[in-house]
Image 1 (cartoon, helix red, strand yellow):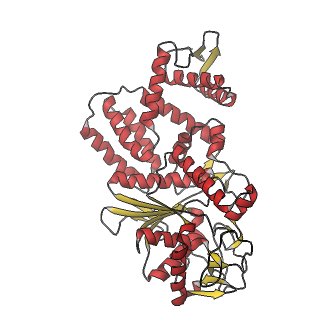
Image 2 (cartoon, rainbow, N blue to C red):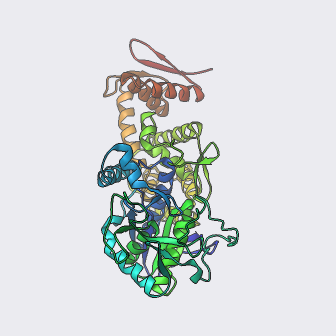
Image 3 (cartoon, rainbow, N blue to C red):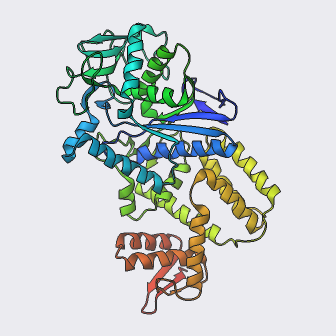
Length: 482
């Protein structure tokens, strides 16, 4: 696989240290609130990468953290702990908040067909490991104690700014927050490895340490979790582009200072999901969740389809119109697959040929839009239905759009509609188009469930397709608008 490496700013083959096996680390959520759909775009693209590598034949060992302590409201080590902020907002304990939003995150992942990583490690379960690594950094001169806190000394590094060419005199910080002055720091870009009670007297979670009772900084957790489960060398580290600085920059600094050698071979960053030209964030107080999309009648997999239509290194503009277009395209795709006749023997040579095309095109820097294009190419090809279905089943190991499962369910509904009555008792009369029959049936079901917003959206979708629907006492009758 060819992948763009954010550290080298070049595309290059992804080469693991151990042949046939890739260690992969992704930054998990800070579980003080629901994940917004911008966060979920990142996890969808990381999921595709994980599955594509497995599809290529690699054994992937995927590790992810859960941040349940230490992530401050500013990534520059200032402000209130996000977990404490969530606990105060909902009048619960920090650990109650962590459990609730961890479960909510994985519920979203399930709906989006995101595979659970092989290891999921909460930050609070690694305190002894943080203390051990920080102690060694102090002993080797890379860290110092000041004002009750332990700081990493960035002046000890020849190249601190790995992902960007910052002017150190200007102290440019990156895409998230500007550094606030901290009189304890020797250098403005030094960062906290361990906070003590001198920093926040009312901190909810504290542990004893050689430097006083306190808690770890955010950046140290990912380094320690990765090293514990993946060893001294990591093949691939993933995350959102807003993590590149300062979080991932600080991970590299402390990890390589501790290890004494280069740490991670490749860095993959997913760009923002924007609304009205700005990146989505929880700090603004307004953000979109997967549950909200569902409440508005959208299928979570239509959102996944929407994300796969764009390249991960390009910002993706979210609007309801754009999501409507993606949702309609996804439903039409399912209808085309449902029109194929299952059964029979697939041509294995053709299946293998199309698999090679998929590996070549999607393997060029995780080009998921090319993967979607190949799906349509298969449907337009001269292959028989059994072969088409076999190829699509193969592709869906990576795309995870539930193409065959959803198409089979749609085919069953269409069969009942063709007989004149669906399982729900709706009669659909039209011109024999399975795709339109299915949409009209969805509208009938939405109206019966009093989901009038979805029913209206389906009516508008049908109108855009040149179809009008008339509700009668006998059922729904559709016809093409002349």
